[in-house]
Image (cartoon, rainbow, N blue to C red):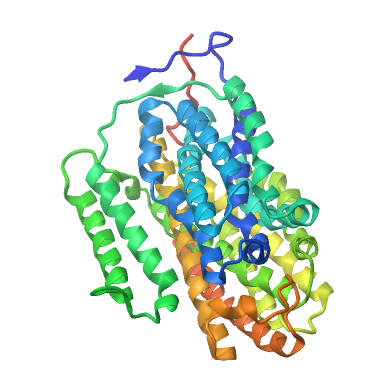
Amino acid sequence: MSNERSTPASSQIRPWAALWSMVLGFFMILVDTTIVSVANPSIMQGLETTMTATLWATSAYLLAYAVPLLITGRLGDRFGPRRLYLIGLVVFTLASLACGMAPNIEVLIGARVAQGLGAAMLTPQTMAVITRIFAPRERGSAMAIWGVTAGVATLVGPILGGFLIDAGGWEWIFFVNIPVGVIAFVLALKYVPKLPTSAHRFDWLGVALSGIGMLLLVFGIQEGESYDWGTIAGPITVPMLIVAGVVLLTLFVLWQWKQKGEPLIPLRVFRDRNFSVGTAAIVTVGFAVTAQSLPMMFYFQLVLGLTPTESALMLAPMAVLSIALARPVGLFIDRGEPRRVATLGMALVGVGLAMYLVLMRPDASIWLLLVASAVLGLGNAFMWGPLASITTFGLAPELAGAGSGVYNTSRQVGAVLGSAAITVLMAALLTVQFGVKAATMGEMGSGKVGALPAPLREGFSTAMAHSLILPLAVIGLGIVVSLLFGKRPVKSDTGPVRVNP
């Protein structure tokens, strides 16, 4: 084992200062998983592109975020989580500048890919550092903050995006990251400790199999409607891409199981029952949370005629309750048993989605929609922190980076599939309602965001509401999975780490 040099100022880690320093950067990159959802109509109009192409700005980010997470978790173990965190922050911030200056949808999608790569370098380091520097019985509160950051960021994204779009245009949802990134960099440089590192060999075949497999699968799912689920080019068809993606991902799993070297995913992390259950559950959470925001935002703006800011404020109760309950829920899971709390949270999310499914009509009551948002907020507060805490509690220090990479990859894989699948479902349901492809929907209004003609609103709202059946079904699966959690261990051998003086 080798060590990064410790900071000369002190040999004692300040866990809470380190946590809050990382939370700022982590919050920023997660906001970008959903902030584009409220901007989609404005981007579609501003860059004169189609709905499908616009939604690729979200899926490209999520895909570039998800694929490298396994390897970046290991890179953090090898070169130090602090170093990888800072590099990722710089890449993300510069890519945000490129996003805001994009002259067309192709450049925007490319810049979003770069953003995703920066986010992938940063994310696993946050969870790995928490696992390594906090004592076991403080880790619940720390993970609650990490978890609620993940949850609240996905909720705050549309709200913040709404204000920025109305104030300065869609470009500012990216420009705002630049000062935040600079501040986060300075704080991390000061407070995030340099921790011991360990040598790793990297499973490049595993990286290739997982990355190409995910790319083929997501591209096939999301673009299938555009090609009528038929031929893309020459003999290549959409079903062939999807099957090839599934085959490569299956080979990836078999390779991880068979190889005798150091796998990308050390399968021994799954010997921990709660880690296995939590990893499966977070896939469903990532899927449902990402999928729900897209139809909601199109409904608020194109059916109810709300501005981006007004649309974003429709989710304000969700964000406020998630933030307000973060500390009480964190204290509870430190002192109590969190496994059923996560189940309760997912159940409340399901109730909130069911309410939206019923309420999303052209003449919907704004107040009832706000109540549904509040129910989702309760669910998020009780879901994210407890789920992260019980999943990672028993990880040994040498598995912190790999375990964090697996957990975060699972969340992002769910988000990627959720984004791709909801795009396909929305397009298909719009086709059923109107008999035209979703790509032409931008031509069906008067050219202004929020201005669908009255005769189209009933069919459009029905399509958006029925789209929510998908995330509702997936979160239902997550509820069933969470029932398999065992009791959290009485104590853990993963005590806090101290750097060498």
